[in-house]
Amino acid sequence: GKRLSEVVQEASDMPLERLIVLSGPNLAAEIVRGIPTATVVASVNPDAAEQAQQLFMTPTLRVYTNDDLIGVELGGALKNVYAIGAGVSDGLGFGDNTKGALLTRGLAEMMRLGAALGARPETFMGLTGVGDLFATAASKLSRNYRLGYAMAQGASPEEALQQLGQVAEGYPTALVAERLANQHGVEMPLLNAIASLLRSERCVRDALQSLMTRPPKGEREFRFVRF
Image 1 (cartoon, rainbow, N blue to C red):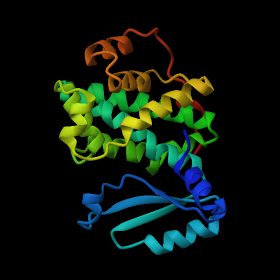
Image 2 (tube, rainbow, N blue to C red):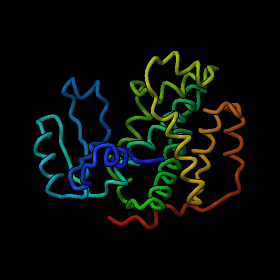
Image 3 (cartoon, helix red, strand yellow):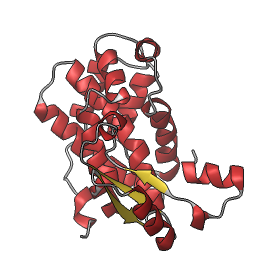
Image 4 (tube, rainbow, N blue to C red):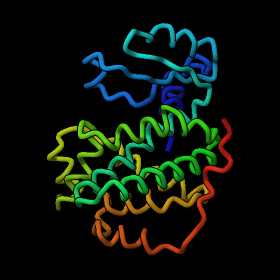
């Protein structure tokens, strides 16, 4: 389970200081239509991030910088997993209460795994975390949302992918993230449930019941976030 910047480094011998990651609530179909959008360019090198910021900034695309490369990459990857869950929720006809809980608890899981892998928790409260998560999980333009929706309608993961006819990044990401969480001892019950659906190990309603009947807990994840 390697981040994209790590893969690029290994494949090209490019110094980390030259790498830039762009991520955020950036649905391509909206960007090309000139709809106002915000994004993040991340680099461990502030000068490189600022150069990219100036390069990409337009009257309809506002660009912010961030030096938390790990957090930005993880947010951009993990949000796809929970977008699948949002599609499942809508496909089953559940309401806004369900989706609100799913996305908030999903965000908490993203922050937990991010902290274990060296990211800053507050990064996930920005555009590349909560912003990208909510945009992707609420949009019928999202491939991952549509994958989950089709699964809730009775399609197997493989059938849903075939219907989609496009890549749904959340599928492989869920399986890799689950392994990383296990390696680092991070509790991610929602991600585990989504991964089990993608492996066809359980039906949607069984997965939901397992989540809703977990032992009661306090909501602690957001206490350490500092602004």
